[in-house]
Image (cartoon, rainbow, N blue to C red; front, side, top):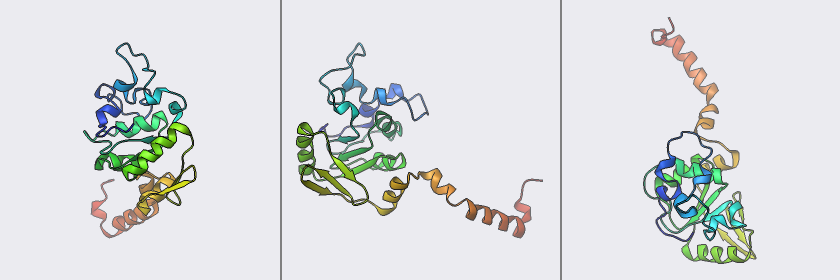
Length: 189
């Protein structure tokens, strides 16, 4: 989808934001581009054509995920099966929401994205190696930058709650210390 400025309302339109569940949104991903007025799939839309109906990687144009800061956008992508979005630039909030929801957003030069798009028309396999930060397509390799902490979280499947749970012992030790040193703060009486 080489369109520039794909905003969060294009990714998941506002009428589907009535849920706080992370599931069930994939069927409405890119709703206004995937369906006609009678809710029939538009056959020539890329994500409605085999093998792209099973895509795990989405190639987008620059400024992907702009617009409102709805977390439903990465939820819809993930529920559809997209695990990685590649673009030359992302809106900041969308970019960070991807990591928080287990999606790898990769920033690449537009020329490489064009090569990947052309390659994907001929071949269906593009491999992403997060450990080595490489995209392998045919006999070519494209390297990408990735923050080491975000990389660790993606590899280990850790979200913000998981990060807090890793600190449970430290939190409990602190609470115990506070209860001893400042018992008047203990409100359990």
